Image 1 (cartoon, rainbow, N blue to C red):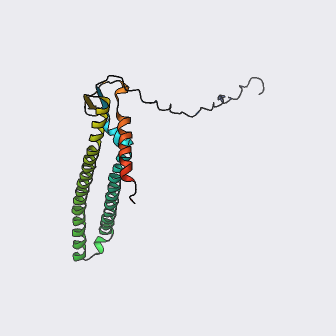
Image 2: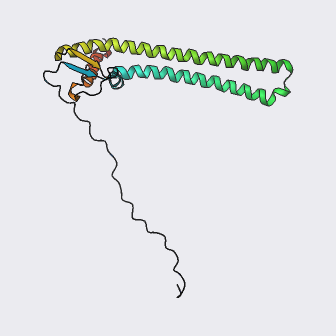
Image 3: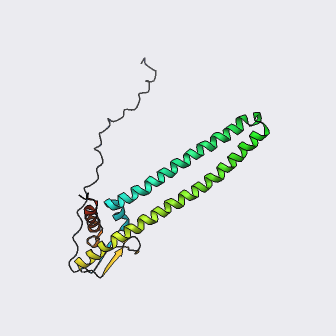
Length: 192
């Protein structure tokens, strides 16, 4: 620039972006060994449910029913919205009897949809309860067997026991999942 004139402002130089390595999770730690002589242990039923093949299958059943009911409800809502739109846009052009009938249809659809939603919720809750009861029935003999094999006096449900801390080696959850999956395999094999 000519003398006496300020230099034009230069944009601030940004340091070159440094490529960040992708964040990776550390590999899962192997389960701690069960302490010799321990007489109590615990397991986490929710983890068993989410990680075992049996639990995943049950969850798939519940999710399928939930999805089916949501789809049915969406179809009902579309029909109701279409009828409400029809009443709003062309209601004044309809004769009194047709408009009155459409209003009654809309009111009935609203009541039916509310009933459908209540029934669907009850049906989903009933299936969840049924699945949970079936799961507990399958889980109990496995817990009994593991407790017997390890000579335990108590096995706590970590989800309900108010367990504040326990040595990781006392966690039977991986053993329960493994035993539950192993018990389910022979039953799932095709019979010839």
